[in-house]
Image (tube, helix red, strand yellow):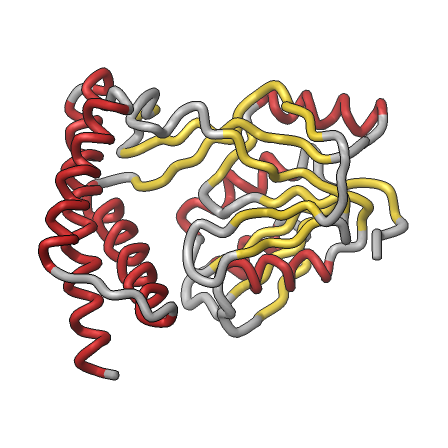
Length: 255
């Protein structure tokens, strides 16, 4: 059921996001009528920071990206939901666009274009830009799907979908260690998904995928135009396929 109160509820999921959260919330203050945070028992200052900005914080067990986001959406009280991650910041143009939208009236759903940053630099190629995401939508009329990684928002009915001027600044990783940690985590989740779906995976397949991933990132998606950053993305992404195979083997042994 759609919410009755007009306005925007910003909904975030968090776990140990103290380092990046302030910038995210500071930008959201300019457009959100309420901020809802679903925190999976952070051990740093995430909750305190969220409360400093007047957010309503719910401490919940982690249920996966989609289910936790859907739970957060159910707590929102406004007519529209703005879904952002703790490492994403609305830039000034996007803030202005949403403010203008609220004045003229929210109609349908809206795509936000992300600028993805790696190690402090905007990645303009490598398949990282443009990166349009459906993030502003009527409450009760959309649901997140996907039990593992790369959750997608599914609209439950037909409606107008528009692009908003401006960018959502996505700070994926500030250094190589954080980037590799993220790649490893996602590939471990993908390995678990494969096992749960009864799919097989072997070393030769992982090598083939590693090579194709490298070629796709560096050449097909023109990662070479990003210089050394594009090379890093291609190499690390290819390396992730080998980690996926190792995680797959480990899970098979433990089953």
